[in-house]
Image (cartoon, rainbow, N blue to C red; front, top):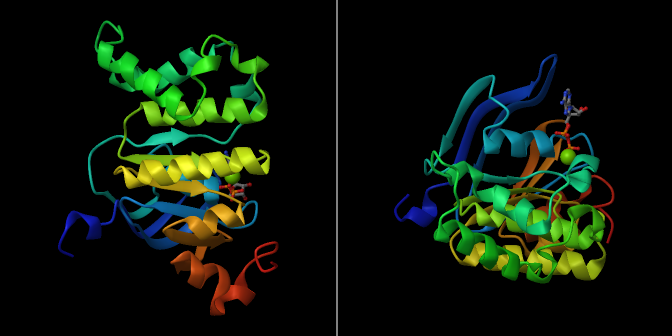
Length: 238
Ligand code: ADP
Ligand code: MG
């Protein structure tokens, strides 16, 4: 461990977590490498969303230790839901919510806040949609607005729960490319995904099953190497 690029963004040791009556993650040991994209994969119910919630700090660890490299609050783009789809907000208002955690006592956005909102919208190519209601947007547009909201937070850890779920290939490809760029600019990105193409392009890959890490490492090893027979469907297929 020498340079900052070798200190994990987040380190989990012996971490268990879950919900009131359910233990979901048990005894996890894992590191999230900094300044790259980590793809979290695994079948439905394997604990991907719970792990992201834990990394975001919204789900507490019931045992073990969670160490973050910095004290900056992570940005968390939750899984797309009926709730986010129905929010009575314009796209710009939704992106501006990403700045709420930083607003001062009078909750008035500064010029820096406004700049972060506009540049995040441009980044995700949704500036043209700024005045439109979220509910009027296509799935791909709305998803890009939610990613822009996460980006606008200016966090050094960006967590996304299936950001390209239910999108077509071209919209998916756009989001993958933007996340690559964001990581290259110095943000650690963790995304839960079922998209094998996105996972292949990631810098690191975690494979969950039954709330445990069954494989972790560079995507070529995890996705195509000797671990292949351990991959749940549809990952084992090509
Ligand atoms: P994934 O994102 O991989 O589909 P989740 O983390 O959402 O997996 O779920 C892991 C397990 O936790 C599942 O068994 C699920 O039923 C359970 N679970 C998820 N959310 C809750 C909750 N709010 N309360 C109780 N159990 C939950
Ligand atoms: Mg999930």
